[in-house]
Length: 172
Image 1: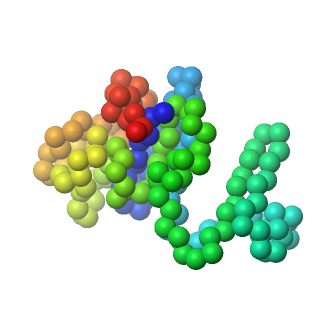
Image 2 (image 1 turned 135 degrees about the vertical axis):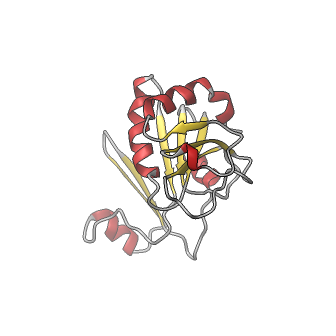
């Protein structure tokens, strides 16, 4: 399994990048899972449906499955800060790639997404886990990154780069 984080500020294009990268990795015959950090409360269940009713009745976990899909809903008794590694452990371990959106403070190799005009500080100067910077404005990167700089809009080139550098993302 290879794990690559995608870090960047809100609005930088992390979700769009992952959305465009998944089919390219799949076209290479690779299986892909995604771990996404949500900053706020969220719900994927529908009030009134059986699974919602089971959770409302107090079930700690509800697994919903069909012949094509599975979802696990887990309630925590108190506020709980999930970790990327904990969530990766929940996934099938035979997947080729896990793309992690968010969790920028965890010890995982990552790509940093930097858009033109971004005034907030970059992570790559101090973050040794940044393996490449993806940007639409390479000349604006100050200081110049010591890691590779890739075109944010050339996702096929990113897929090739990931395949060529897969060893950088081997999960331990």
